[in-house]
Image 1 (cartoon, one colour):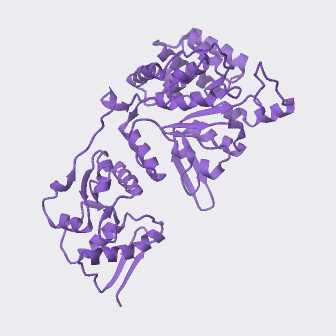
Image 2: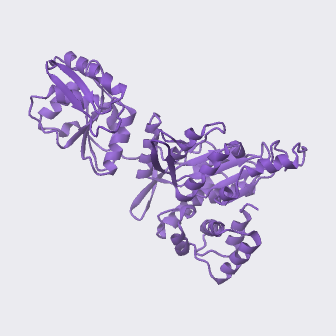
Image 3: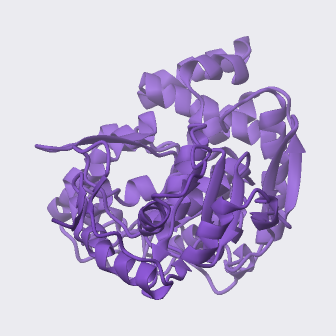
Length: 472
C-alpha cells in the first residue's frame, strides 16, 4: 500500500516535514508518487532534529525517475507549503562543520542562507529560491549562474606571517568613562594584551563591572576561523549571526543552574564563551560546585561533561573575569562606611573561593574607593593600540597562543629568565609560598608586561609588577 515514512530517530520537526513536502510538491504540480516511500536518516542510532532536511527529501522524491548527478552536492533548506525555500539557524553550523572536516565542496542552499555561508572559505555556495528552482538547477548543465561570490570582510586587519586578523574600533563602552582606578586599568590592559584571567575585588560602586564590560572591546583581533566559530556558537543559540570581529561577552547570573553554565544535553555558558570573555559578577555567590568546575577549563581549555548517558567534551578558550565584594555587606575596605560583617561571615564568604581555583587566576586586583578628585586617565582607543602592538609582537616571535595561554614548553621558550630574574623568582617563591603553577603564571604575566613596555626580555621590574598582582 502507498505510504511515506522517515526512519532513523528523526525528531517531531522531521516527522512533520512529510506534510510540508507533500504540500510543496502538489503546489508545484508534481504528482506525489503512489508508492511505498521510505527515507532513511543514517546513522540510525543518532537522533536528528531540525527542518533543514525538507528540501533534499522533497528533491529526491520529485526527481526519482530523473537521471541527475547529485554526488558532488549537499543541499539544506526548510520548505514552505508553497515550495519556497527558507533559511534555518542550523544550516550555517552544519556547512561550517562539514567544511572544517573537508567533507563538502559544493552546497545548494536557500538564497536567504547564501550570503552568510559565502564567507566560509573553500566551499562553493549555490543559491535557489524554491523547490522548482532546485529541480531546474540539477537538470541544467550551467550551474555557475547560481553560484554566490564570496563577500569577504570590510574590516581593518593586521597581516602577521601571511595570516589576517580582523578588528574594529567601535568602543561601545569606553575606558575614558572610568575615573581613577589606575591600577585596575593597568591590570585590565595586561589581561587584554595577554589573555590573562583576572578578578576584581572592591566595594560596591568602585567600578568592577564597569571595567569588566569595557574589556570586551579592547581584546585582540580575530582570525577568520575565530569569527566563523563565534557565528557558529551564535547559531547554536538561535541568535542572528554577527560577523563583526568583536569577541563574545558571556555573563551568566549567579542564580543560574550548574547545567546551564557547565552544560548538559546542550552546550553551556562556558562552552559558548570560547574565544571570548566569560564574566562572573558577584563571584562568591555562584554555587561552589560551579566555581570548582571552572578549574579544568581555566587550566586545560576544555569542559568535560559526564552524565549517565552523555559523555561530551567541548574546547573552550576564554578570558575569565570575576568581580566580588570584600565581604558580604561590601564595606570592609570602605573608609566612609562601617562593615557590618563578623569575622566568621567574612571567613565564610572568602572560603567560597578555594586556593586551587585562585591559583589559576593570573591577576588579582584590590580596587580603591572612587574619590571626587579622580579623573579619566586613558581611553579604550589608546589601550587598544597597545593591544594591537603586543599582539603583533607575540605572534611575530612564533607564538601560536597569547602569553596567558602558553603551555609549560612554550613558557620555557618565550618567557626566558636570566640569572638575576631567576634568583628573584626563587626568593618570591619562598616568600609568597608560590606553587609551581603560580610561578609559571607570574612568568607569563611578566612576559606580557615586557611586551607592553617594548622590552625584548623579562627584567626585574616586570617580575615585581607581576608579583604585585598575585593573590596574597
